[in-house]
Each structure stands twice: as structure tokens, then as C-alpha cells.
Amino acid sequence: MTTQSTIQTLPDFLARQVVYRIAIIWERAKAECVEEVLVLDIWWQDEGWMLARLVVALLLGALVGYERERAAKPAGIRTHSMVSLGAALFTIVSIYGFGGKGDPGRVAAQIVTGVGFLGAGLILHLRGNVQGLTTATSLWVTAAIGMAAGVGMILMAVGTALMGYLVLRFGPRPRLSENNGEADENTTTGQRRHEE
Image 1 (tube, rainbow, N blue to C red):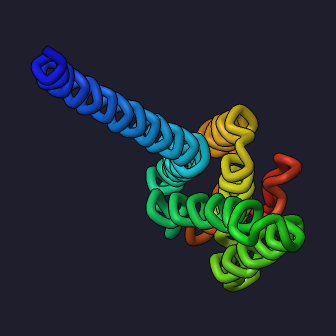
Image 2: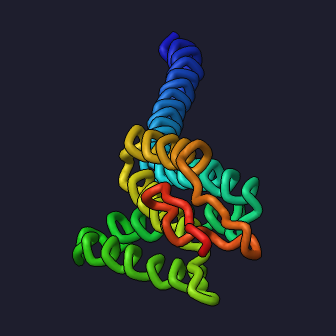
């Protein structure tokens, strides 16, 4: 009888061992799956949020660029979008890309300087007439919008983009004189040239 009871208990023992091992494997698989979900969650919190900042910067730059393109200026949607996107990416990389080493403020200062040189290329001085100054300043503000989006100041970036768009769209424009469509010298004071 002992032999038969051992035979009956051996399969039960093996079955319990198999079930036990399957349960251990299952628990480990669940733990690994949870770790993968946590890694994905951490990735989304970091990388996904950074990508969202870039998209916001791109869209806000396009908003300002839309007004410039609508006014038939040389720098339009693509230029303003790229300036804003680049400024946002430089800002994100300066904060997160070097493992906390270095000074992100230096990169921000170089963005301001670099976009200033880019804007200087847009300004033309012809026959005593200056053109492109507003487009150059809109590029400069667009870089600031991109930097704000890059550090996560989304409300500031959106507010600045809306204010910039409104100033460009509805702000006062210089009056043109009758002489070849050039801007009047006294447009800032609202006076007209007196012809003698």
C-alpha cells in the first residue's frame, strides 16, 4: 500500500511543482512587464514631453510666420517654424542632453546672438530706406517663443505668440509716400512730408 500511495502522491507532487514553477514564471513575467511599462512611462514623461514641446514650438512659430507670409515678406511660415523649432531643440538639449553638466544659460545666450545675426541678414538698407526690420524682430521673438516652449513654459510661449501675431497683424504700419512707394521719413510721428 505504501508503494501505491507513493505512486499516487508522486504525480500530485510533480503536478504541484509544475504549477508552482509556472506561477513563479508568471509572476516574473508580470514583474518584467511592469518594469517595461514603467520604462515606457518614464520615457513618455521625459522624451514624450520633450517631443510635445518641440511640436508646440513648431506650431507657434508657424503662427507668427503665417502673418509674415501673408504680408508677402521674405521670411514666412517655414523660416519662422524652423527658427522656433531650432531654438526649442537647442534649449532642450542644453537642459537634458549633457547630464546636468554645463550651463544652459550659455546656450540660451547663443541662441539670442545667433538669431540676431540671422535677422541682420534680413535687414536691407537701400537708398536711405530700411526694410525687413519687422521681419527680423519677428524672427527674434520667434526664437524666444521656441526657447520658452523648450523649457516647458507653454503658457508663456502661447501668450507671446498670440501677442506677436496680433501686433504684426493689427499694429500700425508705416505709410508710404507717393515717391516710388518708399516709406515716409516721418511715419513714426505721423507727419507727412511737405513738398516745396
